[in-house]
Image 1 (cartoon, rainbow, N blue to C red):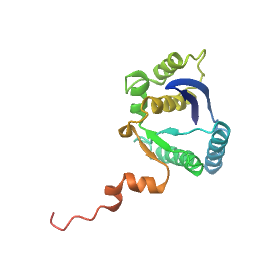
Image 2: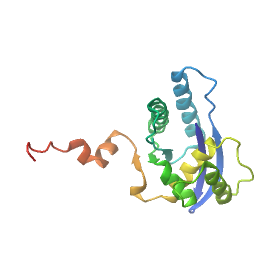
Image 3: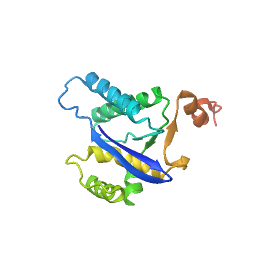
Image 4: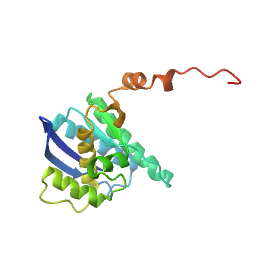
Length: 175
């Protein structure tokens, strides 16, 4: 799990940190989820972010991989929401588009553009951390544009933003 932190002052981005949580050494999937939750809480309690951006789940051919990714994202979201941090999701293509101008850009292209945008001296060998940083930068670039992602501060917010989905009456028979 990669993550990145930026600070925005007067609409100017400042790089704080990027890293990744190495989970391959753990066999138990529930231990991995616990570690994701705990590390996310630790980052929130250390840096006190105003907002949190995540890469949204995307459709893939491997259902098991999608399930694992969705659970990991859900745990990270729950950590943010438990600290009243608004969470916004962005599709991978939207993140790539925001950073590089190309929704089909490679991880390497995204990393190089982040290096340029934030003045990073070096890039990590594994680019999962730049993926996390890219979500943060995408969120900054899309600030104030509601249509860019789905943002929820809790269940009430979800219901208010999805009233038609949640409370729509069933159509009459034959309609």
